Length: 132
Length: 138
Image 1 (cartoon, each protein chain N blue to C red):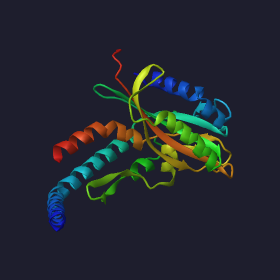
Image 2 (cartoon, one colour; image 1 turned 30 degrees about the vertical axis):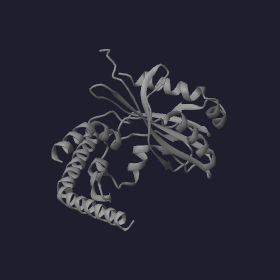
Image 3 (tube, one colour; image 1 turned 90 degrees about the vertical axis):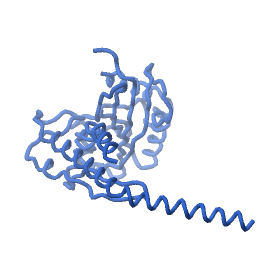
Image 4 (cartoon, each protein chain N blue to C red; image 1 turned 180 degrees about the vertical axis):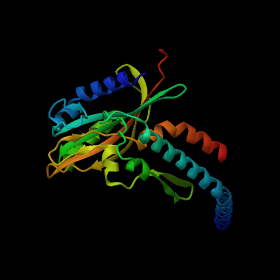
């Protein structure tokens, strides 16, 4: 089971990135929790799926960009994709994996006029853990 | 010069004719395989939505079943050919709340509604079986 380590590695990468922190006004990356008011701007994450294949484990994560206006949202998304939408195997937090962008979509944000939410799916594929 | 143009024209024409003929040959099998894969996806999504689960479900988990309306709404997407060599189908729900459950969102006060993915979960669980079935059929 590698998804906890993968999530930790990815969050560490996002929170340590100066450009992303500048766009977010700090290391504002949180787990999506029902009922909590979202900080704007921020990134929220949800583990959508973790599956095991013969040699690999896939972890699919939804990252929600929440920002004031589409321009700010695009700036954050651009940086996130630069960090995580990669076409080659990479090492993140000491874990070798494929890190790929799967798709994104706009999500309505009815509470505030001008606030924008973009939901981005990323797939992380490390080698399967040999631990029982 | 004229000979070169003639050669090219013949080659293109032959290739296109061969491709069209191949496409006509595989089209029924390809559509059947994709529709079968879509049915497997629908079945998986319905099974996920009908599985016993505590309510409210945790963030990232499929939603707990309350009325069964969402499970009943899952249906196959009609087959289409968006490009000559790409055939598509899938699973969907037309219920207004389906997208908000799958991807999450927020309410009018700005409070978060966490994602409760069920179609993406179904896709992940059924992916390997669908690929195997499509390889076997086509």
